[in-house]
Length: 323
Image 1: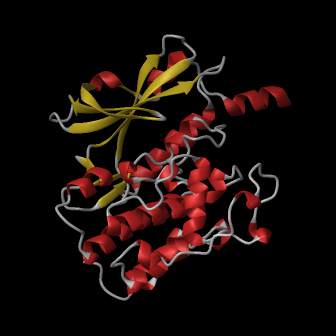
Image 2 (image 1 turned 90 degrees about the vertical axis):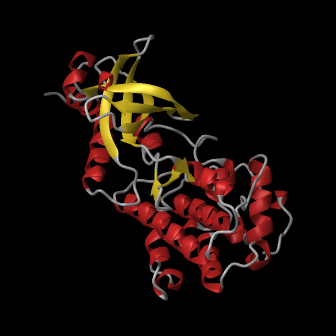
C-alpha cells in the first residue's frame, strides 16, 4: 500500500452504508421533549422502548462526513467514551448507548445520538432551588465529587473544556456527576479556540488570551464552580472577553510582565496594575482550607495551578471525613 493510501485509510472508516453495523438505531428510543440545546447539539428526554420504558437523555450531534465516510477519529473517540463507561465512575454521567440517525438533509453529515442516564437537575437549578446556604459538609462533598470526576477524565487524557453548573448534574441523593465531557473534542477534533469553548464566566485567562491550553483549563473552571457553591452566585460574571479579563485581574491581581504570554493580541498594559483581592472578602463565610484550595486553583499560569489530583489530596478534603 502506498504512503498516500495508508494515510487515507488512517483518517476515514467504512462507508456510511455500513454505519448501521457500528451503532444501534435511534428508533429504540421515543423522544419525549427537549431538555436543552447547546453548542454541540440538542438534548432530549426519551424513553427506552426496549428496557421497561427507562427514561434517558439523548444528545443529538452531527458528524461531518468525508468522501470516504466517517472520520476514524470520531470512531476512536466514541470507543473511548464506551471504555470510560466500563469504569462506572460514580461522578461521571453514564453513557448507555450510541445510535445512528442516518444522514442529514445535506448528506454531508451523519446524525448520531448519544444516550445517557437521565438525571433530573443540574447544579444551576439545584442552587437556585436550595432554600438557603448549603452546609459546609454538603459543599465539601459536592466539591469532591466534581474534582473526582474531572481527575478521572484527565487521567484518560480528556479535557472537558466547558465546565459550568449546567454541565454538572445533581442526583436525588445530592451527588454530582460530570456531563458533556469530551463531546467538543469528539465531534470537532480541529476546533479552534472560539467562544463556544468554556462558557465565559468560567473561562480561564489562557483561553481568553487565545493561547494553547491543557487540562488546567478545567481546574480554573472548577474553582469558579466551587466558589459558587459557597456564595450561590457566579464568581466572575463578565459581559465580554475583555470585561472577563478585567474581572479576573481585579480578583487575582494583574500578572507580572514576565508571565504574560508572547504573541497575543491583547497587551498587558491594556489593564491597570490591579492588586489581588482577599478572596475571603469576596466569598464571605468560606473556611480557611476551602479558601486555600480555591486560591491554588485560580492561578494565572496554568503550569502553577493545582491539578485535579492535587486538589483531591488537599487538606480541605483529607483533614476530616467528607460525609
